[in-house]
Amino acid sequence: MSAPVPVSLLVNGEPIEALVLPRLNLADFLRESLKLTGTHVGCEHGVCGACTVRIDGEIVRSCLMLAVQAEGASVETIEGLSDSGEIADLQAAFRERNALQCGYCTPGMLITAQDLLKHLPVPDRQAIREHLSGNYCRCTGYQAIVDAVEATAKMRGERPA
Amino acid sequence: MKAAAFAYARATSVVNALELLAAHGDKAKILSGGQSLMPAMNLRLISPDILVDIGGLAELRGITVSAGVLIVGALTRHVDLLKSPEIALHAPLLRNAVTHVAHPAIRNRGTIGGSLAHADPASELPACVVALDAMIVVRGSSGERRIGATEFFKGIYETALSPDELLVAIEMPVAGKSSTFFFQEYARRHGDYAVVGLAARAVVAAGRFTDLRLGFFAVGDRPLLAAAAGRLINASVTSALLSEAATALADELDPQEDQQATAAMRRHLATVLLRRCVAALLARPELEAGVTK
Ligand SMILES: Cc1cc2nc3c(=O)[nH]c(=O)nc-3n(C[C@H](O)[C@H](O)[C@H](O)COP(=O)(O)OP(=O)(O)OC[C@H]3O[C@@H](n4cnc5c(N)ncnc54)[C@H](O)[C@@H]3O)c2cc1C
Ligand code: FES
Ligand code: FES
Image (cartoon, rainbow over all chains, first blue to last red; front, side, top):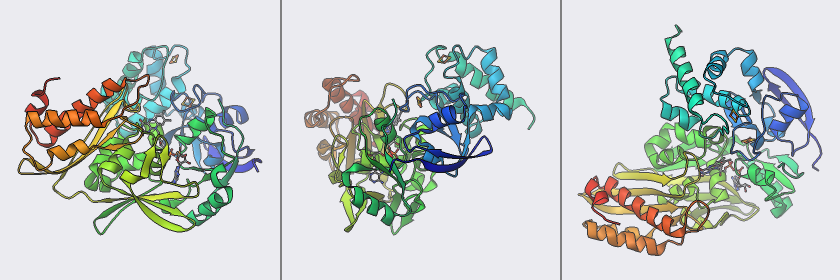
């Protein structure tokens, strides 16, 4: 009975129909079946945050969700957030401040940081650290990441609405 | 790693979920938020034959207040507890606790029912429901039963649930105006499982505790309702009495040693939390400072 199950979902706004094995997690579905390799896979048990995506507007770990659980959901990946321009300023701030080195954590960091800025437009450094606490970066030492998120929040605050 | 193969069934109702559990027995696992089950399956710590996904059952999600009882559906997510005005008003302890549970992306999927059924002794919410004297509402093929929170937790990842039962809701008395709460934990990093933590509910009148429930976590194989609290109820709390209670607490605990802390360190941290808690709830900061250790 562990036969493939049909799912239909939206990925970055595009309708997708697929047959998936129940054991296939959403991260692997995005990467292997849809070739959206911006969603990274680190630990596969929820602790590193590299696989973070948005489901119906809220961030989740795609390694802890089965593809079949995404039935009827709207999934947004780093490719979607990049292409729409939603996080162009945040990406620029990451570049300017060297908030990435190898880049492995970066898609997850960007999605998580954008989630914070959506919910709390003017976070202090403590709030930034808390929100990013579930995302590992093994390169930067985090300071530059916190700087980039803080700078983006400031710039967005100064920009006329 | 990745999970071994399994079959998947999306439950269409609570009754349907119970039928699936009855048919598959302990070969089945319920899938709620998946935030504990999926890591365990990906690490191949467990390999159920079939997952019964109850995630879509709207009847199990939500927070209501009726006749002085706060009812929280099993599928209510951590993020819902954080945002709910009813929780902020009637069970602020849960709100305070849930800010310490994991990280935002995990709180968006993890559920209170899953957390209680999982029964990790270092988890925040099990200790909260013990401190709040909650009833755990459970449904099986033979009907519904209510289990007091202190009876529900049986050991590490062990509860009073049988494999064919579903945790459906948590019921708590609404916080009266006289109730006050305390929540603190030691953790290596914000969002990590606690090294030691304390969730407490008290009623204070004229500078004394008329009630005090201390729910410690990460101090043994299950959340502990500390008997040492009894020494502080209906008594004039002095530094000496608090020291006595702290000694009684340390004796009562049977903490594990692991890579995070030794048993002795856990005992010590638990007594520090006790002192802070009592000082905060009685609004007497000198009680925290006045005890040497
Ligand atoms: C990186 C990381 C950090 C975390 N940190 C913390 C933390 O600091 N504190 C903390 O408390 N938790 C933490 N968690 C766990 C998280 O809170 C989980 O959400 C929670 O433990 C389980 O809820 P769930 O809905 O995801 O349950 P699931 O993972 O779906 O299920 C967990 C278990 O309970 C059973 N179950 C689920 N629902 C029911 C039900 N209604 N009736 C009967 N059985 C049921 C399942 O079969 C399974 O055995 C963390 C998780 C991760 C991945
Ligand atoms: S790969 Fe999902 S959290 Fe690490
Ligand atoms: S840039 Fe290498 S892990 Fe963050």
